[in-house]
Image 1 (cartoon, rainbow, N blue to C red):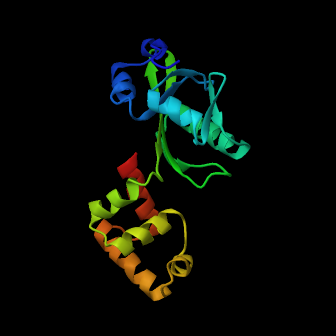
Image 2 (cartoon, rainbow, N blue to C red; image 1 turned 135 degrees about the vertical axis):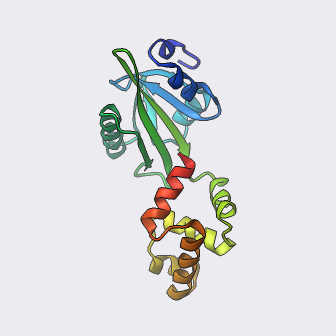
Length: 193
């Protein structure tokens, strides 16, 4: 299926550019039944490795029941016309991936384009720190916020007081131009999506 051109007949021009611009990005084109129509080389490598998605005989699924259910829900949202952009992981993996999915139409044909990025790749967090001008400690605290930890838990992990963590969080908010943990996550998703 690598390099297969079956999807090109289904997709409009903008979708083809969306899929084929960079082969280094894990892009997968599937139909409404999750059958793989096309995938980039990076996607083939990712699906064969430690990804929350797997190729099961030409169909995309989750590595475990919870992840598969999450994937099917996101597919339904994309098929309903919504662009999906969320973190996805699996129960036995500590890594998180950013899943972006959208439907593309060509007449009466419909396909879903999936972009999967390894969010926890070591290169991403320093890029965030540099992008917003964060100090080393602020970047580390940002990583813990993204991981879903509270200020109390971050203080425990970093061996500092909760007041110190809250001060760093205020600085992070100011440098990122946000006011809450939810806005931090939304900003991060926009950057990596």
